[in-house]
Amino acid sequence: MQNSLPCSHGRPLARSQPSAQHKLGKTVAAAVCRPRPALSTHHLRRRIMEQQLVEKHTNQGVGSKLPHLADCVYLDYNATTPIFPEVAEAMKPYTYELFGNPSSVHAYGRQTRAAVDKARQQVAALISCTPSEVCFTSCGTESDNWALWGAVMGRGRGMTQGQLPHVVTSQMEHPAVTACLRSMADMGLCTYTAVPVDSQGLVSAADVVAALTPSTVLVSVMHSNNEVGALQPVAAIAAAVRQAAPSCLIHSDAAQSMGKVCVDVRELGVDLLTLVGHKFGAPKGVAALYIRQGTQLANLLNGGSQEAGRRGGTENVVLLAGLGTAAELARSEAAATHAHMRRMRDRLAAGLLAALPQHLVRINGPEEASLQLPNTLSISVKGLSAPSLLQMLTDKLAASAGAACHSSHGPAVSPVLQAMRLHPNYAVGTLRLSTGRHTTPEEVDSAVQLIVGAARKQGLDFSSSDSSRITANGCSEQQH
Image 1 (cartoon, rainbow, N blue to C red):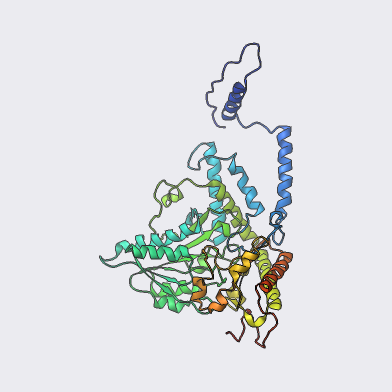
Image 2: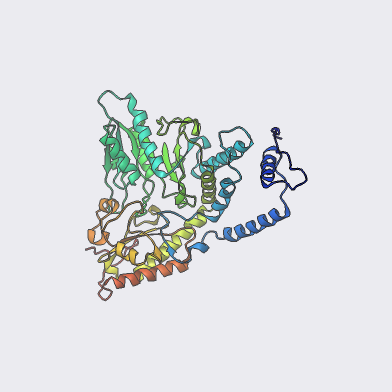
């Protein structure tokens, strides 16, 4: 038991009731000096009521609708997921009662240190690595920037004077990668090559290897694309790069993949991997970077000894408790969640293809289901304005006309659709619809009705048709 601290109490007033200030002083002192007392009957009843409320909400598992998503159909899981009920419950103690600094050695610090350690173990189990290889960050952008900056600055030191480190990436990457590389190149810190993708949004391992130079220190290719759901052949790319340039580091941004498909860093063969909490049921503001043991990576943030000296800054225990629980759910529910997302996505695709003029519609991304995220539907309708449609439905349907991280002023074609060489007539009518753990069939059917109705209001011609056939992924064989 922790030793009691000496306490000083105010002297009670003679022949009168203790003052409010005195009562407060006794309460605070008791909290510091004595072990936590047993809960009163009132507090026990309150705890029971809270637990009953939690149980009511935590019954909302895979395939069940969340009560607070009743008014607007939510099909924007690739932008962010709701915080899952189990995650919110796991975070609750650290919002008030368990507040200590994890670096402190006293009882309060030990409580929160245990939470940080548990979260690290949960994340490690999700991606099949050791806990010491997981470094917590604030967001996916930080993790991506750290991977790029750390590789360039850490590996570039051994180069001859005048020789710049080189990075290979793809034209499909998130701005957290592309903007960071442009910035470092503008500062004269590195050069980089962005390899193209095919019409399905897939990167070729041969193209990546062809882009390697003697100065290449890093290859960064995302695990899955956030707009069209293309799953990149990261393992094949890593194997090919290892053979051609054994000392080159390999990074993958797996932000969109967590909680949707299996991500095993050993099977992928990567040195660095980004994961982001709010993409799979955790809150915003927490993420991680996997750093393979022995990898030489310069620090991005310097300060205290947190994260084994790799990243200074007091840990956000509340968010880490949520991240760990989300990781555990993603691992334990993997098969059920994957199957549910796929069913909802396919139901959505079938409904839209049946209701919209087929000769005006194409579905973007890989044709084979094994190369797709199970939850992502990128559908283009020629003659439609996707931004205008979503504006019409702003209070009824939540979806995206492109990546949620991009700002849109008018019908601009996203860099991803440009890289896939999608015709502008289809690109401006592209909707990104993404299902999730709590999507229901009723929501999917409602979304189909809303989209078709809004398309009619835009004047889309439903009367004409042709004999073009829709292929397995919804692409018309006769594209115009």
